Amino acid sequence: MKTRFGILLFLVALGGCSSATTSAPAPPPPGQAAQPAPAPVPVPAAPLTEAPDAWQLLDVADDRVPGASVNRAYRELLSGRRPEREVVVAIIDSGVDTAHVDLRASLWSNPDETANNGRDDDGNGYVDDVRGWNFIGAADGRNVEHETYEVTRLHAACERGAAAPAGLTCGEIAEAYRSRSSDVEWTLAQIQQIQAALDAILPVLEMALGGEEPTPEAVSELESTDQMVVQAKTLYLQLGEAGLTPEEVQEGLEAYENMEAYGLNTSFDPRGIVGDDPTDGGERVYGNRDVTGPDASHGTHVAGIIAATRGNGIGMDGIATGARLMIIRAVPNGDERDKDIANAIRYAVDEGADIINMSFGKAFSPDKSLVDDAVRYAESNGVLLIHAAGNDGEDIDVVPSFPTRHYEDGGAARNWIEVGAANWDAGSLAAPFSNYGAERVDLFAPGVAILSTVPGNDFDRNDGTSMAAPVVTGVAALLMAYFPDLTAADVKEILLASAVRYGDRITSEPGSGRSVPFGSLSVTGGVVNAYEAVRLAQSR
Image 1 (spheres, rainbow, N blue to C red):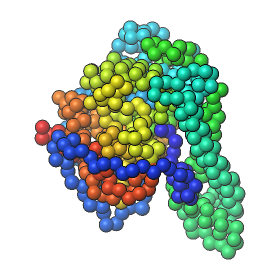
Image 2: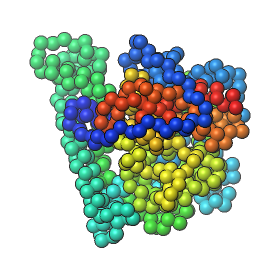
Image 3: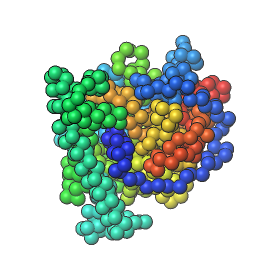
Image 4: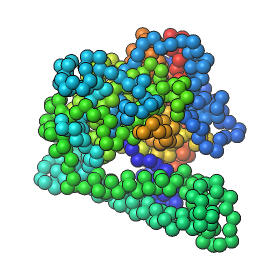
């Protein structure tokens, strides 16, 4: 879930990228919410033309975007109050920049571990785990950065003569591998063409601007009768309308080159760095204390959405005052391994996490039973699990994105919230990339152009259900901090009951582009709302 989506949406707009069409999901089943939900505010008559900074904190009535009404909750309902407890939020992700100025005050610290003394002070098996743990690192300090996709690992195993996991055949795996390879190859070729066009037009525009670096404002005002300049201006502005900059095109190029070089490379196997036995699902102790890792951009962005320091005048505000962030590195650039996710969940539970944020997912889960057992363990200890639904424009009632709340041997986790991504434009509410599901996605949350922290004391906008899940996590942590008697089950009930309903609002169905009611895309047909959630918590 780490890919930026602007470039893909631009390609879709050009008509070159196809998506599977699925049938419209059934309406949400009745009786899911504990209490009547608040009605939505009508779409403003004069919608905004771009997302305001940190719009996830804003309110649809006050600010004209369907944000989570966080600022309004603090201003109108929690003014003068302080959190009554600290809430430990585990972030299972790519790593977090723990030196970021806007995150330092929100980091969890293991109270029973002394930093950097080379000893396992608390006897949990993990040496110097002061901020959390890294399950994709080696004892000597090296780290896994790039990984293969799960389908690549399965395909490579089949080619070596191994049997396919239960429920699959090697033929099905080979077809899935070929399909993904084809998609990546096609998209990479298109991005390379866009990059080549930029390489050609940027010098033309720079010369026409008298040596100045092209910017959207300068190019918009540029007038010329030279056809080459006119064509260069047109393409540059088309990219800008799609939300792309030359930097983002370069970022997309690097991402897809990495998919080809690592994710789909059946000969690539970085696991030897870790030094564990990848086939031993019962192995618990491996890795290192480096919770930042070589690429912490994704996890740092997630962390800031949840708990960047509020009111310090730096960058942006997080959602949850009182949250303490436990960092667990288990998600590489590629597909995470089930063993690592299971161990990450268990570590979080054992170290006292109240909530676990999981902004990752994949198409195959060969060791799902390991993750299922860990999820059961979390639920038995009253931990709330919040998962991003995925970014494939798929109906996950039909095409699952793992991990899921549904156990392999039947039943499902109750303390689990599945989150889709909402757009800042209330007139087109479902993000075009978001997965959805009338039965398996609980609610939506802001997930497009979300401003948050990135490594190096910086801030940037990202898109994805990876951003929507921590919005829900942040609101859940806010509730637990100010209403300490609430259980995980209580918090889930409140969040679903208080989500602002947009059931009859017509939106484009992700993936197909068909016009459908927003209410058909999730259980609640709603968008998470901190103001309504706090109001409901106060009335209990």
